[in-house]
Image 1 (cartoon, rainbow, N blue to C red):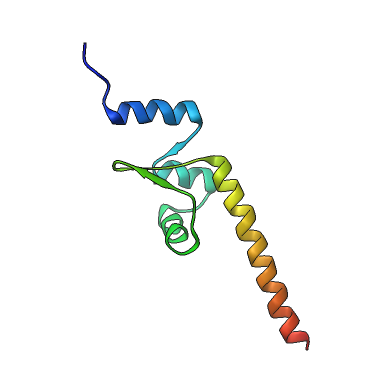
Image 2: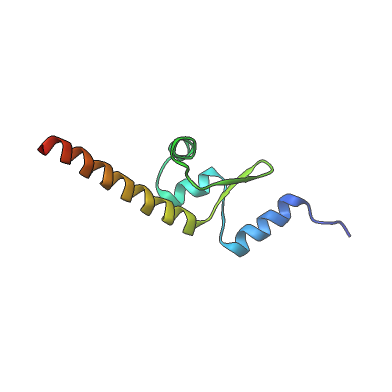
Amino acid sequence: MSQPGVSQLMAGLSAEMGLLQGWASIARYTGKSPRTLRRYRALEGFPTFRWGRATYSHPQAILAWLASRERVRRERKRAVEGRVDR
């Protein structure tokens, strides 16, 4: 009997935990392109982690990040509008 490899174990864990595996899967979930998501990760802290060569993310972490990002965008917009009104 052969032992399962790390990639097989992670695939099993990702399915069990509801993780999204790979940029294509994460992109389908968010409706954004993989390139855009990589830019979000580099510039805005989009929640992903690497295990070996694969990239993973959890849907709940993505939803929390999107909510946080929207809050920051609204606050910035209010700050800019406040400066213009004065």
